[in-house]
Image (tube, rainbow, N blue to C red; front, side, top):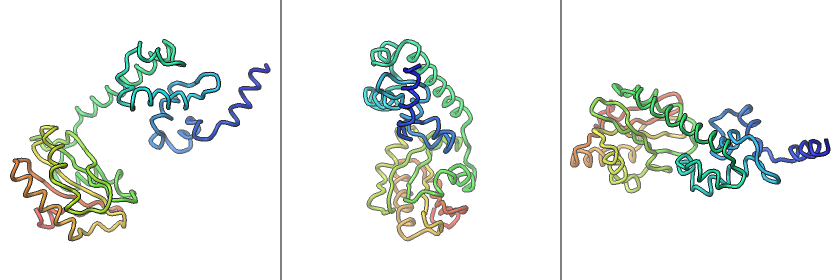
Length: 232
């Protein structure tokens, strides 16, 4: 009884960020960090260490979420606080995530019109407070096979270099690329910098044989296609 009472008192003193279940219920799973999500899978930590702290230690040990997902059962159980059952549960969770990802890949989005790009990305970009320059990489069927944020900050032709865009495109064996970025002001009207970046990327793509299909600017509930505007 004394031990139970001590645990209850201890939990009352746990900081809010160390109670990820409450955060998930309040804010939704998408707002939790990797460590918080792992802590929910772990459920309990060790003496004098919360599940959240154990999760942080796991991520630090394996480098990041990708390294942790690749860890073997033996590697996991070498970590203090991770027994055979927790190791199995972690491995099962990551495998489930991989299968969901594979399923998503098999349900690839096909881009036919600029509004397809806007529908795909607007929810992700429209409320960001900084400009994010994102590339969608497509195969020969105009299906999205990858996505990469290339740059965060004010758009400038000297910063958004074709090398970074097309390096990622080549890595994914892309047939074409669609670029997009958000305007935090909510107004998607293209600036001179937006037009300059678009023309630079178009010329670079023509040289290496990977077409720039469009550059879409996302506003608050609206978008502009630079292809439709005649810049491509």
